[in-house]
Amino acid sequence: MNREQLIGLIKQKRSFLCVGLDSDIDKIPAHLMGSDDPVFEFNRRIIDATIDFTVAYKPNLAFYESRGLKGMQSLHKTMEYLAKFQDKCFTIADAKRGDIGNTSTQYARAFFDKDASGFNFDAVTVAPYMGEDSVSPFLSFENKWVVLLALTSNKGAFDFQLFENQQGEKLYSKVLQTSQHWGNSGNIMYVIGATRAEMLAEVRKLIPDHFLLVPGVGAQGGSLSEVARYGMNKDCGLLVNASRSIIFASKGEDFADLAKKEAGEMQLEMEKLMKAQGII
Amino acid sequence: MNREQLIGLIKQKRSFLCVGLDSDIDKIPAHLMGSDDPVFEFNRRIIDATIDFTVAYKPNLAFYESRGLKGMQSLHKTMEYLAKFQDKCFTIADAKRGDIGNTSTQYARAFFDKDASGFNFDAVTVAPYMGEDSVSPFLSFENKWVVLLALTSNKGAFDFQLFENQQGEKLYSKVLQTSQHWGNSGNIMYVIGATRAEMLAEVRKLIPDHFLLVPGVGAQGGSLSEVARYGMNKDCGLLVNASRSIIFASKGEDFADLAKKEAGEMQLEMEKLMKAQGII
Image 1 (cartoon, each protein chain N blue to C red):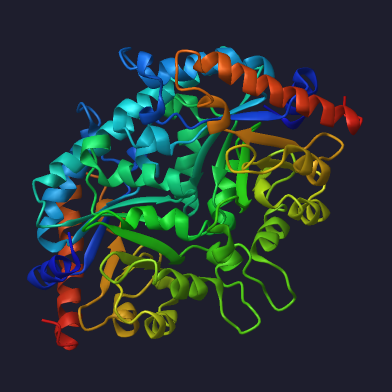
Image 2 (image 1 turned 90 degrees about the vertical axis):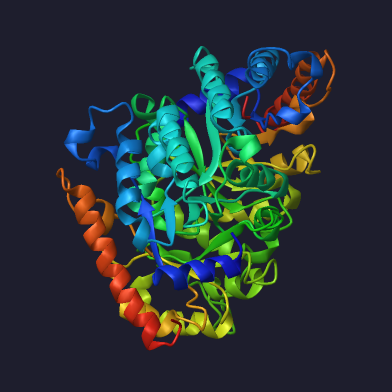
């Protein structure tokens, strides 16, 4: 999916919600556990319940890899199911990959090249530590995106991401400055955590046009209105992720209904925020 | 495998060779392509040919993930085969993972918890960008190791790893300083590329005891004697990786013989270097 299509989808759905399919099998409602593939069944019902309010789905690979081949089968089935909604949602493999150049090319095939791997994600999250040649192989795929880690929402973000040089430039800022030239605002997005929304203002000075994938709203405590205030640009420029607060809103038989309610409430709030900024 | 066992293995085999199973299906000898699982067949023969000279095997996940479920099946079969040599080699999942705490726990299960995922690696490579809570979940598994990226051997290593603070401390050095306290020399190793062997001397000032996993010898141009000169400690403290120079030494029917020859030559050189330093 290209940038124009993504912006179109956001305006059409009046939403910039990304639902994180962190489908931990230990948290899945008991009544699904008898089915052949409980995680796929869970994901399918979550998708059906939330698709009207959701611009992007983001399965985190860890929750699938932890179950070995069975887990990867659940993910393949989930992505085949999502292919039915191909022009109606954007898909992000939250995999945080990155390796030396020829190896990153293999990772790019793993997520983007359906003929090679079976997966056809629109985007993949990538860690910046190994620099340009670890990122650029992903950028050679047309209409595919890198979502590069810049400032994450976890406690450990403070360990290295705020490391500062003599000019007062922080590492995450150096990552933004440097990497934006490896691609463009049509194939690179950045992860910027919502737990420090005021830093979005600093980020926007460096990269006014790029999309930001913002985790940390909901279960991790970030505020949607603060994110919009500091992070929204004229094209919206945001994908705000919620995982547990939506997919595990209930652990009972009503899990899909509750997920729909939560996603619907976020969509309504997002619609208001976009209207207030004249985007729709 | 614990530190004592690893050191024992190195002394017994008179080798600190790690063979990278970067088994790119496009480079596998043609005569194997008719078998049910060419990549597994290739790996099995490489292992048989090199096991006497090799302390560790390190499949890079990218080369398996790029082939989807089939690729992961090849890797599972390879690891089942390596389990036959359980006390005779150390295994490293070169996966460069890392995510927020609860998610890294899932990645740890993916590589360390055989009951959950089918994999039972001794170690996994982890990227440090997201800080302590992205690394520490891996350290709670007994006799398992994190191999943390510090200074890699690729061109992009210069982009961020040498980013320097006001005191002249570089990012990779900050990573070493900070992360060594998250675990100890019995459960953390570091990736330090051989392409700048003289920097190993600086690294050894900070972490005299930790094992270093050193890529970049062979196809990438680093020198084994330089690595030993600057990086070896009293327990050896090194695993030097070679991938392409061994596994793709020949693309013909003699690939296993040539791999054996290459690995044997490296083992001999390593034996000399260990003897010179009084380790064996």
